[in-house]
Length: 337
Image 1 (cartoon, one colour):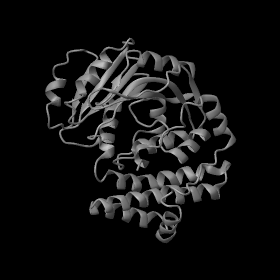
Image 2 (cartoon, helix red, strand yellow; image 1 turned 45 degrees about the vertical axis):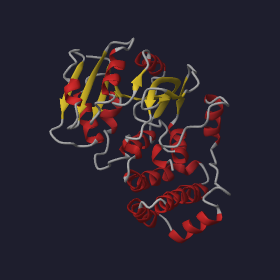
Image 3 (cartoon, helix red, strand yellow; image 1 turned 60 degrees about the horizontal axis):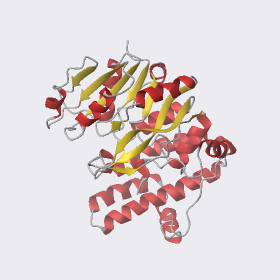
């Protein structure tokens, strides 16, 4: 039984999947299995995967394209390791990634999940941004995780930097398959209701940013708006330890005004289909008159933008875990405008 099971869902990944797999095979920690699940790719992904003979690699194929989260769930059911390491076809592990993650994880047995920092590379593998190399990890308690995600979105920023204890998956369930784009966010929010996370500050992977990423494709953001609505409602329900009225006002003002900006921006560039889809979601989720008035008065939040009112616990976490030259957690990609 391997200690770590690495899940690699692949769809039309011919450009990067070899580099992704080679970075796994080059790890200093070798007690792992890789479950590669090909989601009915139509390019040369299958041919590339057939060139690997390493016994630690298991390749499975979907007869038809199912999407990311159903594919991840299928792969999870095939795994045997104590830890389940999520991974991506676009990204690259540093050589000590698994070894370092397990060292931090083992030192924090109360954490159900660990997520590491990352450097960013571009389409050609060139370094775009580098995170400060801080070899520390901190426990983030459920209340703090939930509050950070309410204000900033997905606390991990991605799924390619996430490792989960198998025992937690068995108790808490897997990814929701009725969600197309926000099931990872919903999964983290669900776990944060009762479990602590391990926040690893050492950048252990290279995250690739490119124009073909699913999260930046046309039509994806309105889906995020729709699927995130119930997730934020669940987070707001947990905000009993802070000013609930302010939390609701922040949600309406900061988030919904941002949604309206997205709608207006697409209309201005002539993408009426995207603008209509976003406008439909805004009407479903907010008071359109109040949102429009807030948009105008605030100058699209340029003149005024509400600030998060962190609880003492979150302030203490930032002061302890984040040096002054590191910004607070980035917003989830679904909230970038």
